[in-house]
Amino acid sequence: MTKPLKQSNSSYNAQRFAKHANSLLYGVVNAIRAIPTMYGYAVIIFSHHAFADFMPALSKLVIFSSAVHQVMFTLMSTMPFAIGQVQDAGLIFLSAMATSICNSLGDDVSPEAKVATTIVTIGIATASLGVCLVVMGRFKLAALASYLPMPVIGGYLAFIGVFCLYAGLALSTGLVINDFSSMIDMFHDTHNILLCVPGFLGGAILLVVSQNFKNPFALSTAIMVMP
Image (cartoon, rainbow, N blue to C red):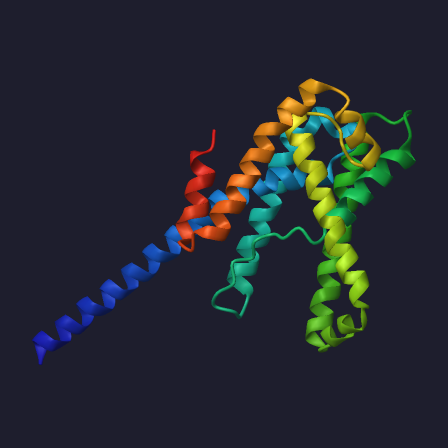
């Protein structure tokens, strides 16, 4: 009786080790994909020129808040597959809020005050949204979202794509690009076009890899080997 029991314990321990190893590996892969994305999100949210001198700190703040979101979602969700990675759905609202706050404060207010006001306001707004989502889930009101017209949802998703395009161009050139006119002005300088070429080529390569390779490590490997 002792030998089968030891074999059973060894098999159980091996399964637990394999499970933890797989979880750790998936976490590393998810971090490789998510961290560069968070930098792009920071550029989209804080696209106003008043944030230019504070982007390193603001980028770290976005990454930290995303990590907190992911940890809380993973620990508290009832879904065993939950990872809580931050999505791009709310970027246009956060960007519009940040830009609107800076414009409303005007040029007389210091950049430090604009940054502080924006961060506090965005924090309160997102926390309030979280409370609303919890209430909707608690009272089973999620079906109300189905009353949104499909063209509204499609336009919203398309606008997110436009914002991501602006962010990519801003990351490539170092300029403030948050609307169509600023994007057109960027192309007037040949040097800016050359700066955007690596970004376009990198995006094309990642698209080809994601569509032609089914291995889950292919895309992560492509991201890692890019200069």
